[in-house]
Image (cartoon, rainbow, N blue to C red; front, side, top):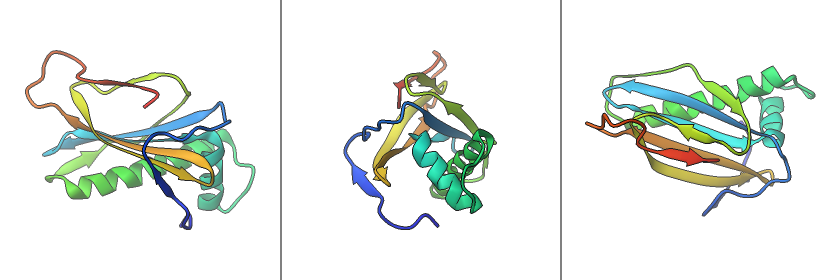
Length: 142
C-alpha cells in the first residue's frame, strides 16, 4: 500500500519534525501485551494521505491513520501469539519526549526503520507473568 523503501536501522532515526504520533493497541487473552508504532507527524501525514487518497488532512484523520496502522501491526503480532486474544481499540498520542508505561509488561522487541527519510518504530510489549509489583517497564520516547 505504501510502496517500498523502508530501511531497517539499529536505532531510531532523527527527524527535524518536532511532532511525533504514537499508536498503541493492547492484546488480552491467551497472550497479554501491546503493540506500539511511533513516527514523525510528517510521515504520519504522508501515510494518511496515501490511505485516504487525499492531501491536507485534518489532525483527526492523521491520527485515525496511525491508529489503523497500529491496529494492523497488532493484528500481525496477534497472529504469531497463542490464541484466542482480543485487540483493544487503538490509542494515539502526540508528543516527542514522554514515558510510555504499560503496567506489568516488558519490552520484548523493537524495530527501527526509516521510511521517506523519516523515522518509524515498532515496539512489542509482553505481559510479565506473575508480576504484581506495578509497572515492569517504562520507555522514554520509545
